[in-house]
Length: 159
Image (tube, rainbow, N blue to C red; front, top):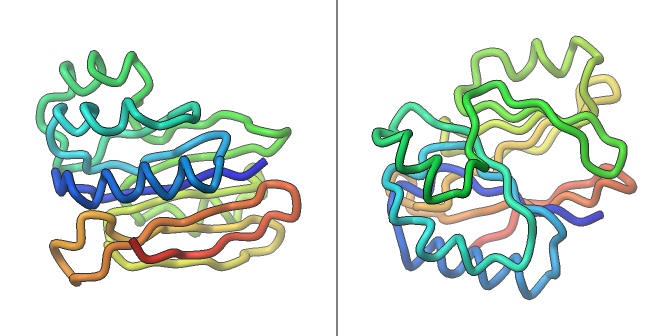
């Protein structure tokens, strides 16, 4: 199963639109947002995804009630754990415990955001991914990640 990962969109609607187009073109089965949507109106574009959706709240997400409503209840407090294609996944926004979660051996995939810097690495048997910043406000490079859950391989793609 191919999944798309996005984070730190920070209301950059044109970049969110590019990410949706990329995920739809690649026919991803699920999209995971690792937080910092910022405003609920981002779902005016995210609703165009041709995939299931899961997200977590980030530190810059102010109106959590409306974000939850606009997402159809698909944005959760962190850490959020679930399974896809028999893989155990945990999604957080802040990076502080990402390595500890990976080192625990409880998860096949740890996804985080917050730093705005893309990361793909293996820790023991766990894949750790930060898709970087889709919003491009901090470093000027808008990126997302694609993860193939079969071989547990990830790549960072520019928007």
